[in-house]
Length: 290
Image (cartoon, rainbow, N blue to C red):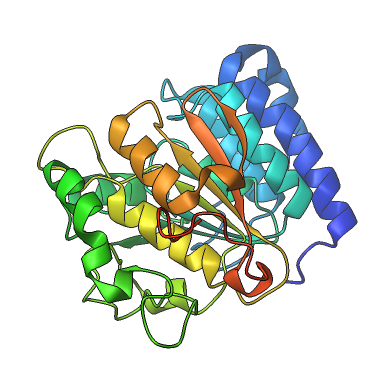
């Protein structure tokens, strides 16, 4: 099916924004309006066709009829939604599956949204509820209780550090980079084959010692943003920045000077590729990513 044009996409996003954000806070008053949406006779696809009005209808019905709520607040969702309005259709990579996954899928009409989840049981639950999502089960090598050691030692691994080789400040390699303990080196091929316009880091778990933590997800998001080949910058959103490890790794790899917004527990970074930084990196030896 031919994807909607940019004008149609923009109109769709505006309507979807008002509908879904309102449903998140007070769905019952809008229930009489739902018959105006397209009839929902089947799931909206397997995630490999661009979502459209049917996906928006699916999401609206889901949030109007379930007690489950997204992991993020209304203000946090609105911050990300502003980028979707401006850039959609886009390529969106989300670390984590959750109650908000149908929302992100629906709010990117004409685009591609891919989810990465580390918990096998939770993956099966969400996929059973929303089989149309484009999602992959992935593994992490890290543990939260190793976060401080990894942070202090990552520069001892040349493949973890920009400009550590003889070729200078070239884009870091993520795929196949098993030598860097922070690199997610064995993700599904489609994750590496294209630039991502927007990355949402809201997983993996990071609230008990044996959890994977988000160290590798943050490093990988930063490396992907630096290596972008296409036009424009990469918008990176990091959730749960009230936690020490998330803040520490964000400041080291996503960089304070690239932070353009925040609300609640969500930070927004707009990261330019290294090819367009013209030698203006401000981190120096203290923060080589910045």
